[in-house]
Image (cartoon, rainbow, N blue to C red; front, side, top):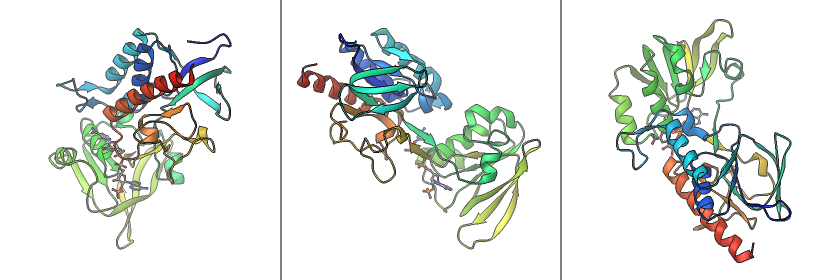
Amino acid sequence: MTDDNGTRKVMILGSGPAGLTAALYAARADLEPLILEGTQPGGQLTITTDVENYPGFEDGIMGPDLIERMRKQAQRFGTKVRFETATEVDLSSRPFRVKSDHGHEYAAHSLIVATGATAKQIGLESEAELMGYGVSACATCDGFFFRDKQLVVVGGGDTAMEEATFLTKFASKVTVVHRRDQLRASKIMQDKAFGNDKIAFEWNAVVSDVVGTREGGVEAVKLTDTVGGEQRSFPCQGLFIAIGHSPNTALFNGELETDSVGYLVVRHPSTRTNVEGVFAAGDVMDPSYRQAITAAGTGCQAALDAERWLDEEGY
Ligand code: NAP
C-alpha cells in the first residue's frame, strides 16, 4: 500500500520464516507489505532437508516446501514479493529510503528487518580457495557430489550433526571434527549422530589447513590438536563447514544498534529497534534460539508492532 507520494506503509527485508510471517500478518492487516527477498530467497530453510520440529507437520516437511507454503500464504493476502536485495538504507529521516540492486528506490513509513544470518567460515586461505571445489558450507546443496567419499564436517552444534547425518546418505564415512570434547548440539541430534555407524568423531581438534587443488579437489585436511597443539594430516575428499552463523547487519552499520557480535538489539518484549518505525525479526536479532518457529514468532510480533506503531503515528 502506498500513499500519494508512493510511500509504502510496511517494507520487509528478508524472506525467511521471519520475513514471510511478518508479511502474512501485515498483509492480513491490509498493509500490502512489500518484501525484498534478498540474495537467498527463503533464507536458510531453503538449504536444509527435513524440518522435523516445525509444529503442524507431524511427519516433517522439507525446508524449501515449508518456505514455499509460507510465501504462497503471504501472497494470498496481498504481499508483494520482489527478487531484489537491499543495497542501501537511509533511516536518518522518515519515510525511510531503501535502494535495491535492481536500481529501484523505495520509501516506507515502517521497516521490518528480517535479513537473517549467514554461515561462518573458518577463515583459512585454502578454505576460500577450495570453496566449491571440495569445500562446502551446505550439505543439502553439495552432498550428492560426494558419493562413496570420506568427508569431514567441522562443528559441534545442531547444524554439524544435521549435516553429518545427511551426508551419510552419500559418503562412505563422515568424521566430525570438533574443537572441544563435548558437543553443543541438542541431545536428540547428538543421539542420532552417535547412533550412526558411518559417523566418527575427532575431538579437541580444529582444521588448520585444507590440502588439495581446484582441479583435483580436496585430498586431506590438517588437524591441529586444541589441547597439545600437535598437527597431523587427515585424508578426506570433502570438507563441510558447520560452525555457526553471523547476523546479516552490515547494511545498517551505524544506523541500528547491535550487540558486540552484530545482532540487532530490540526493546524487549517488543521488536522495536533504536530507530522508531524500524522493527527486527528472526535470526538477525536472535543470538540464542535461532529456530524456524522462533523466527516466525518474532516475524508475527514485528508485524503487530509495526501495525500498532503506524496506527499511533496516524499513518
Ligand atoms: P552453533 O550452535 O553456534 O554451533 C556452532 C559450532 O561450531 C559449535 O560447536 C562451535 O564450537 C563450533 N565453532 C564455532 N566457531 C568455530 C571455529 N572457528 N572453529 C571450529 N569450530 C567452531 O551453530 P549451529 O550448529 O549452526 O546452530 C545454530 C542454531 O540453529 C542453534 O540454535 C541450533 O539449535 C539451530 N539449529 C537447529 C536445528 C534443528 O533443530 N533441526 C538444525 C540446525 C540448527 P563450541 O561448541 O566450542 O562453541
